[in-house]
Amino acid sequence: MAESYVEHEASHPALQHHFENLEQQREAGTLGMWVFLVTEIMFFGGMFLAYTLYRSKFPEAFAIASNHLDIKLGAINTAVLILSSFTMAMAVYSTQVGKLRAQIIYLVLTIVLGLAFLGIKGVEYHEKYVDHLIPGTLIPGNPFNPDPHAMHLTQGVLMQHVQMFYWIYFAMTGMHALHMIIGVGLLSVILYFSVKGRYSPEYHNPVEVAGLYWHFVDIVWIFLFPLLYLLGRHLGGH
Amino acid sequence: MSEHIVPVKVYVSIFLALMVGTAVTVLAAFQDFPGALNVIVAMTIAVVKATLVVLYFMHVRYSARLIWVIVASALFWMGILFALTFSDYWTRGWL
Image (cartoon, rainbow over all chains, first blue to last red; front, side, top):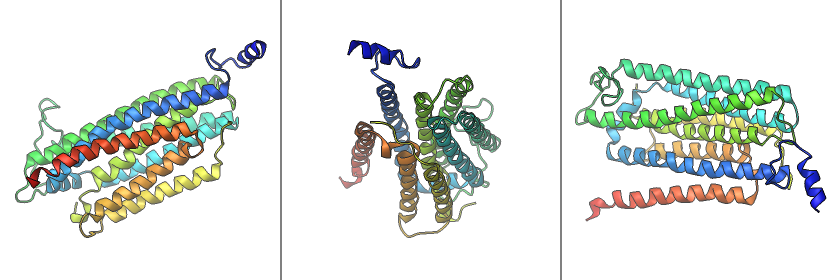
């Protein structure tokens, strides 16, 4: 028994000494990432809770504020992110079946799509900056002060409730963007080791685990898009 | 227990389903449904899309039971977070 253990350990350079074999190591890695993702779900869950609460308190203000978001850019970004999830899944698949060139191509595509998402998000943030929609005095010299006429503010709707929507919008999309930036960093490291030929059908858990994180960030956006961009469109938005 | 490799065909189908779901959710958002139906439609589509990503892109459908338990626990605690908070906020006017 002892000899076979030692033999097994020496069989693959990536096998850590505290695991019996690569299969066990892979499952432990996946499990660990999922436990982390549960904490992430709870973290974003708190913000989704705040959103639900304030939306139910100020429904008209939220619809008006939401209708001012750029639905085209939001929809394009949703498509970009879903496509990046697909290329990420293909990167994992390519590693599993040992197509190492395809693995690198798909990783590069995923990173490029992630950066495209962040670029489009940046354009949107800039539009909000120009319209004085960045809440509070987060930007010195450019406090929250939108033109009530441009916002199509109706009777009885308070601008501070519109501002509440933008606090939540920037908190949630900002946190999501931060996760995207971390994801792009993570995938860059994976890409570096991919190019060095570290991953193979026997040992690919880092690619898979980075993929799990990437897909999670995609799922957050799948909920953010309808909740933030689409909630008031049926009321005759602009 | 060796790992299951999901065929490319499945990934492509899921990708297309997610794109169609996105298009449908945008179109549905512009229809004025009665009551709270707009939110219900939007959230149903989002939940279906998220489920597809979790089951296929994240391989949970083919994963160990323990992964299922972990995922279910996240949903369970999210349920507690929402249920307890709103049982407070939405009943304050009853007194």
